[in-house]
Length: 457
Ligand code: ARG
Image (cartoon, rainbow, N blue to C red):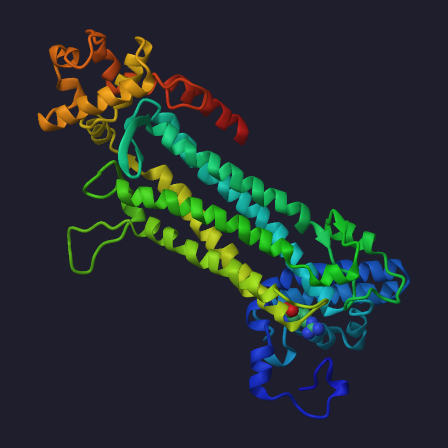
């Protein structure tokens, strides 16, 4: 088969080289964007008088029918035509004859592929942002039901202070809000059009890049043609935002795994989000959060791979850059599947409020409150800390919790203790007392819920 660029060559391409240098097996995902870009390009060529109106109409019709035929699997991509751009151009020429050969006037695959990537990522960045919102909605609706549900809050995975379960869930809501912000911010850089940069230096044809950009819905065009075809920062930004997002998802996933263990039993994931064991009939495994935790690795890997591909590349286009695609597609697809599973998994999870409550009444997570109690009665915080440390030690030795010690025992540590200490130590009061802005006290959590709701509105 003759190549679109065959003129300069006297030998056929080695078959293995042909297969390995082709990108059609993966860049066919850009098909619709490539055709969209071509339609805008030829529309501009006609407006500028570079091709005739009749040729334009013929080419656009041809592109539409090529698209339809590809979607109906009536056309077969081939490695001989290397990538999505040349496969489509070849199909077009087969469809409408030599006029199809006018489409590539004033354009190079270098600005074409970059434009396709920008179009693809613009769409998917918006889609990812919307899917993040779905997860936030799920967190929010669980949170609303659990303002008064208490569970131990941890540091070092040791029980620290009791918190409202809504507060714990909302922590993830805000992480996701920042993630969404990162994606949306990256759109500013993705919303730039490389087309018209040509191979690297611009073109001799009197093109109108701003018109093409308008046709394609781009906010602006690259100022520098060499930068336009060499830039892959916008993909790195997407992957960077994706990595942070997956890091957050992996932390949440880890908590879901821990909380659904026999040892915790704080939540139960819906059966539809768990799987069983082929040997142990009793097992119900939290495979989904485990997988989400692991998928983080491939998203980080894709970022590192592209950073490494781009490092040290001279301007402008280099074939190395074809390696930008699979990682980008994989990141988009991994995020999509992860977010789409996460939202309903959160939405359907059962919260074992009794077990959480039980846990906060059987620990020392109210110890800070005794310290604060003494401070309010004039003891310095350091002194109070020391006293409570000894009280905790005594309680542990007596196999008791802080609410079980009698007033005489308290008074033996400080004469400032009185009957009201028992109210202070009740877990619901411990939580409620943390009413500083952003704290876990129910009054503050309600304010937070309102702000979260406004944020999504
Ligand atoms: N398939 C190529 C890529 O993805 C398109 C650009 C090819 N340009 C070139 N001069 N070989 O990077």
